[in-house]
Image (cartoon, helix red, strand yellow):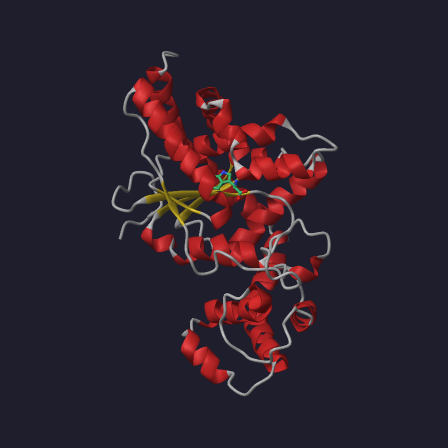
Length: 341
Ligand code: TRP
C-alpha cells in the first residue's frame, strides 16, 4: 500500500469523480443512493468528491446561506465516513479550471442536447412563472467539465444523474472527434440498491428534498424521535400482508421493506420470514430501529465536526491542491488542442 492512496500519481486504481450540491437538506435517499456508496468503495478507487457550489448558484442567491451550506455539507460528508486520506474532497469554485472547461463544454454543446435534459425540462416547467436561470440549461455542460477534468473512469451517482453522465460521454466523444483524443470516456456507476428510496408519504415518488412538507423524507439531521414519528406515519395499505411487491398500491410497505433490506443486508426471503404473522406496526418499529442506528452516529459526528472549523478548512485546502494538480494538467492539454496555447 502506498502511504497516500488518493495521490493523483497512483495509477493502479480506477479513478472516480462525483459531486454533490451544497443545498441544505440531505436525506436518507441521498445517503443510500450516493454517499454511502462513495464511502463503502473508497478503498477500491482513487476518489475525487466535489462540492458543487457553482451548480448550487443556479438556485441559491444568498451569500450567507451558501457559505453556511458549503461548510455544513463538508461536515456531513466527513460524518458519513468520507476519509480525506483516501479521498480528495474539494470545492468546485476554488478551481477556476472548472468554469474554464465549463465554458468550453458549453460551446461544444448543441442547444438541443441541453434542452432535452429531463432535469432542465422539469425545472423549467415547475418554475415557468418566475422564470429560471440560464445556468440551469448549461448546468450539465459544467457537470461534464467537472468529470472530464479528472479523466474519471467512473461517476458514482444516483439514478437521477444518469442522463447528465450520458451527456458527458457524448460531449467527451465529440471533443475527441473534433480535436483529437483527449478525454477518458466516463462510465456511470449506479448501484441498484438504494438507488431509489421512495417518499414515506407518497411512496410512488422519490424521497425528495424539495417536497414542502418534510414528513415524506428522513433527514440526516432528524432526531431519533422525529425519525420514529415519520416512520410510524408512513403510508401503508389495508392488505395487512408483509411482502415485497411492485404493485403501486403496495408501494408504501415495499419501500419500508426495501429500506430494511438495504440497512440490514438481509435477504428478502429472510425478511419476509421474520415478519410472517406480524403487523405493520412491528415492521415500522423494526425499520425505525435500523434507520436510527445509522442516522444517530452520523448526526452526532456532524455536530462535533461542525465546531471544528480549522479541521474542515485544512481538509478543503489539502483537497484543493490535490484536485488542482490533476485539473490543471487536463485543462492545459485541452487548451493546446483547441488552439488557445
Ligand atoms: N448534478 C449533481 C447533482 O445534483 C451534482 C454534480 C455536479 C455532479 N457535478 C457533478 C455529480 C459531477 C457527479 C459528477 O447531484
